[in-house]
Length: 306
Ligand code: RIB
Image (cartoon, rainbow, N blue to C red; front, side):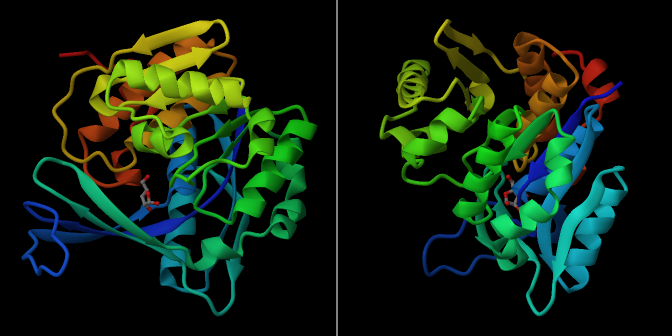
């Protein structure tokens, strides 16, 4: 029986341009291709958890436009329970304008649209979904008071609580830390939260220790091609990433978070969940786009490192 992951977060339509490099300020560049692709950190993590073996429900908001319809259809196609996705009249659905360069690096600007309407009251309307969850996952593309409300409620219900602090805030409110079981930033988010440069494993370890000292129970810093670092009061462990040929890193972090949450929800050990999430993230980097790049459970099982 698969465990249940509930994601409270954003849904975006990604407007993706590929270009040989990212533009500089004031510059016009000719791009190579354009596509609209379902994304948003919350929806990506929901899709990852569903493809990677969990039962999943999503709580979020879209606008009353074609993008909103398409994003809901994409989640429903993954058997994700979308009763908690509310359509807000008179607003646009969230979008992300993404440029991917020839080195597979990206730059992203988001416009919140419907995501900005995910209030604590909306989450409370779907409280039954939280009650039914094993693992509750949040990010920061929705209002911070909604994230705080969800973390507090999930903690009160005794759920496993995962926060992916993305995009990064300068610092997390101090009272959030004790509500989080697994805090999962990437390098730049860990730097934003701690002020410590995360440009080496030693830097990542210092940042992780600072986040533990702030009160997070466990910290996982994702480090791109360097893999990830797991830290708790018992110690720190580095998980090197499987080697792959990168095509597009968009949603690699989301794939890790969704895969890690799915594995935990299914009763896997933290060690297994780390390896599973990391293999899933590595596979996602070999494919273009956000949700289209996320692998399935069978893809991960069949993965043979180069
Ligand atoms: O993490 C990747 C996601 O960030 C994209 O899908 C985009 O929507 C932005 O939210």
